[in-house]
Amino acid sequence: MMGTEPNNNAGGAATRRLRRRWDRMAPYYDRGARWERRLLGDARIRLCALAHGRVLDVAVGTGFNLDYLPADTTVTGIDLSAGMMQQARERAETLGREVQLGTADATRIPFSEDSFDTVICTLSLCEIPDQEHALREMRRVLRPEGSLLLMDHVEYTKIPLRWLEGLRSRIRGTPPRRRPLEIVREQGMHIDEYHRFALGLVDVLAARSPQSGQR
Image (cartoon, rainbow, N blue to C red; front, top):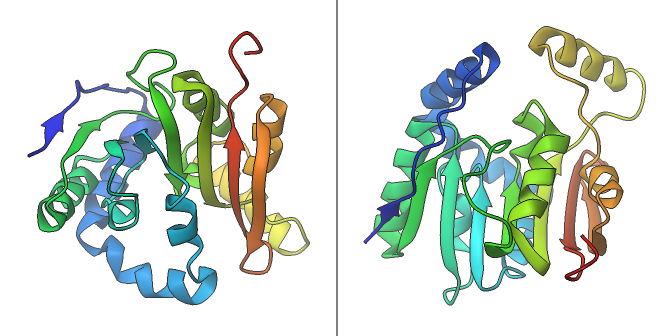
């Protein structure tokens, strides 16, 4: 049985465009899963295995992580797209897994501070217009010494691919993407594990929230 958290109705033209885009893509999104395995191997499986306790899956998408999150975790998923969320519900039903799902913007996570033991976000941060704000929100809802698990595409660091990142940001009207590693460090989190895949275009990291009194 699945429940639904209160909706967080984010506004703004960019947000609405992004929501419509992912709603359209939702029925076909998982077709690219085989390419992920070829490029990243079992990186997602290993990352999900680090989750514990109460887990928040930010931009849960079609619920792909549900296949790999430990059975003893309690999972909540949020996503901007109702279409993606429907795919996640169907996956959870197939798996027989109880999951709390709700629509929300990653830059306005509708939970109080210190709510989760683990926050995970996989291959989604790159599509969030304000990465830094989203990561601040993820840290906010983490309990002291909680785990932040990230796997994501990053900005292209070498010419000529670096020019494509500048073009992408101008077309979308968003800041250029940064490496999650840099932003997480700036926010005072401790890096436990860090790996790069796909010729350096994908970061995988596990970080830890500061202890109580150091936040």
